[in-house]
Length: 146
Image (cartoon, rainbow, N blue to C red):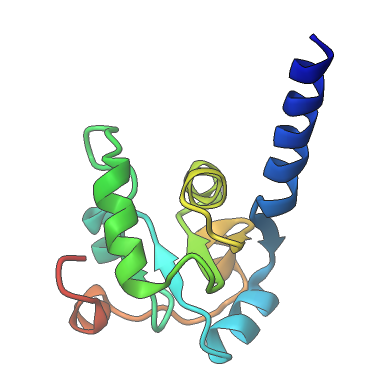
């Protein structure tokens, strides 16, 4: 029994020490990190991208589709084409809600070491008067399959 307790404690300690860091950021930090080359993954749907536009340089990889479904393995494969788990990544959606689940998936299951979650999402970006790029420009810059 003591051996099981010690093993469980060591496993928990190891899990905590290798767990990724999810960091909430504001728009100023988004702009700074993006300019420094940290990839921005816009997880909204194609309809949302088309309606509002996207943050310049964003990679468009839908997390929750129009039917409310998530294909986590397919989504992770697309994200890994943009950034590997040892590289930082920024995740943005419309309001910051969907990015919570996506960030947790990246950090908890996919081993991403540093995930930035944009508080307030694209709405907050627009509310601050920051520019958006038309979807067509962003699609041209996305990796194959994204």
